[in-house]
Amino acid sequence: MQKYVIGECPICNHDLFVTKLECSNCHTEISGKFQLSKFNYLSKDHLYFIELFIKNKGSIKKLEKELRVSYPTVKKMMKEVTESLGYKVEDEEDEEEHQKTRDDILEKLHKGEITSEEALKMLGE
Image (tube, rainbow, N blue to C red; front, side, top):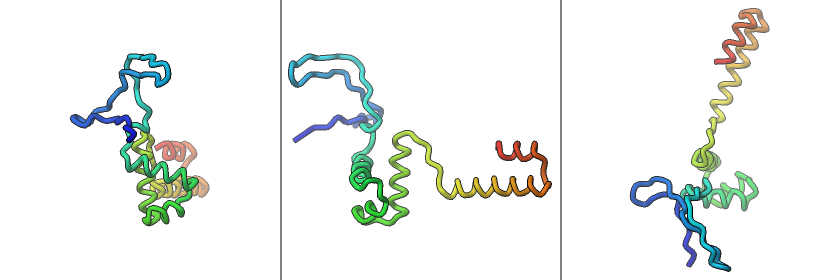
């Protein structure tokens, strides 16, 4: 049975570090404080999801079938994994709302209801 490196302390839940490496061939040992990859800090469920995502070549439809879950559930899982890796994820609804706001500002500018300076300030916000 293979044992895998865990990335989180089972007592206090803080990140763990590797402090010793050993070559399986010549038995050379290297000591120090080595950080694990961000994937080592993911839960088993998140790692499994990534494995299935790659296996299914990124196809959400195939993931839906294999996991027997709905499209929104797959999207939610993908968002959780992405955030666990340290990336910010904007919701599609948020992006659509931002686009609508930008379009409204540009329309007001086109109609002459606001100045270009006002439009730039509003777009900056």
